Image (cartoon, rainbow, N blue to C red; front, side):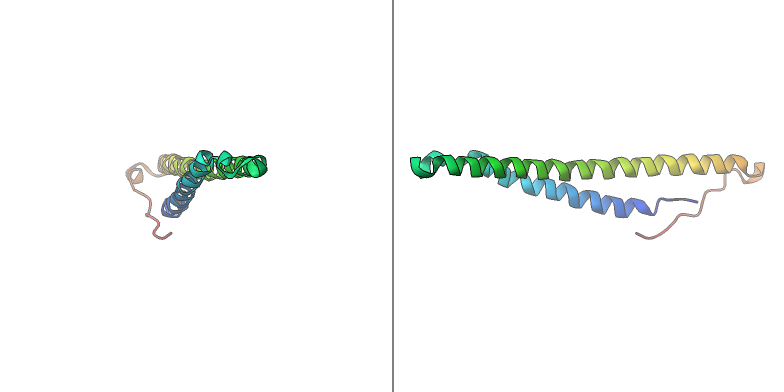
Length: 109
């Protein structure tokens, strides 16, 4: 059996998580560059706390999205390695004249 059919679906999910991570990087930079001192002494402390909280939250979400993308990339690799090992092990069990028979390629998402 081959599990290559998962590759396209995993790649699609990985790309989506990478895009989420990249999409959060811009807002995080904007929050980091904002100067709460421009708002005056009356609200500077609250504005600074607000910006710091949201910068940290955005950074955490960006890192989580990136970690999801990395995990999916590793999963894709693991599936491909497992698939290749499974095919090789199965071929070793076949009759000598059939050992070079490739598996049927799965089609679909």
